[in-house]
Image (cartoon, rainbow, N blue to C red; front, side, top):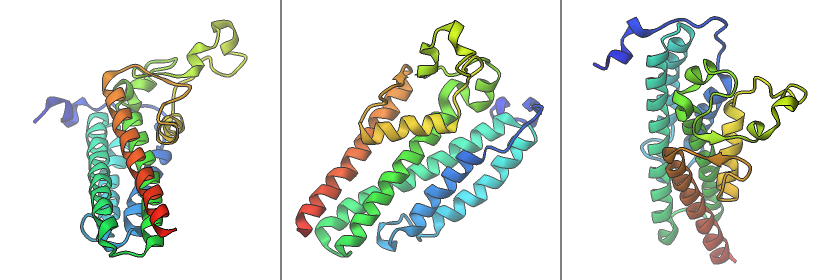
Length: 224
């Protein structure tokens, strides 16, 4: 077993708060799978939501008790499960288009749900991996990010305090904004991607988003 995952490595952090934004994002990703037709879900349509709920319990507990290595590991497992479900549903969607097994409106709604799930999934990856994770980032004040160059760093040092960015550090909403821009504009727009792993993830996210949008357009034209 990795020594970094042993209980002896944990150190409770003062003022630990529940990270409700990523928890809600995971639940929303599971909810997307639940909303999909059975034919577009990997396994029963309720399976992903149940798995996410089961994994969230020890993830939250490990965070609240300061077992940060376990929390980081379980968070990666949660993200991996959601990612596999997303990719599997996308493959099933591609197969379902020429088969005409689902109604056109159902396929269009499913594609839109998968597009939204794509944003949530990669936002979770960026938030979880950047700078070693949220705990490591919180210990590097100010800023903490190592994979992204957010616009707050471009503010002159003398003006940061006046603009409320003196001790600014990226939160989940900031990574969600990056993920949303990557899925809509196929680029992170105002935030530079520095790390190679982040660039690869951004490429994968843009590719998935483009694939879903192409399917939406193709199906829309076919319906018309």
